[in-house]
Amino acid sequence: MIPFLGETDLSTGLLIVFALCLFAVVAFEFVNGFHDTANAVATVIYTKALKPALAIPWSGLWNFLGVFAGGIAVAMGILKLVPLDTLMALPVSVGACLVLSVLLAAIIWNLGTWYFGIPCSSSHTLIGSLIGAGLGFTWYYGGSVNWHKAEEIGLSLILSPLIGFGLAVLLMLF
Image (cartoon, rainbow, N blue to C red; front, side, top):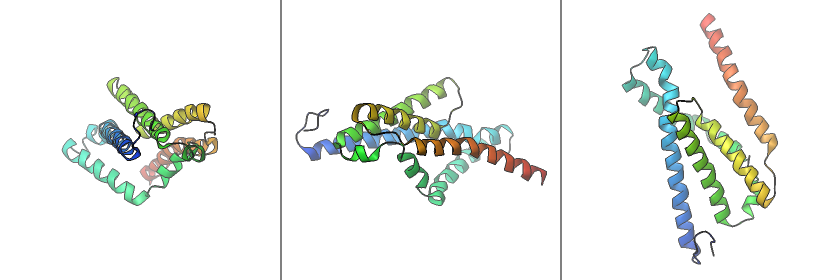
């Protein structure tokens, strides 16, 4: 029996859980699209380097191609924040609740920052949501958030803009 659905038929319950998770992923990607695209194209539109009708599809194309060039290594690294060993031993409904809580928290935060005009990265939001859900999960079910991986990710989030800025300065001077 899947407790939060009240169903004894596992296949029906799994389909409903899958549909909810799929809807949450699509909703997050939709919010991520209009939230981060504005951040990505604001400079080129403001400086009139590109017109909005060209800048937005150009940004979308490069984001789409970035998945193919970069692969899923970043996504798999971020996924290692949560205690996967403990999670895999529990029913599917627990994992689904974790996924839904991460995505809903990220969607709500992104919508809030968008509404109030606060610049915020959807990737950073998703990482924070994963750590928060991981803390809640470990408090209730045991296990531990992978703090070593969180430190690696945090360091990369801090260093990457600094390296990019430094390279841009060198390129400008060159």
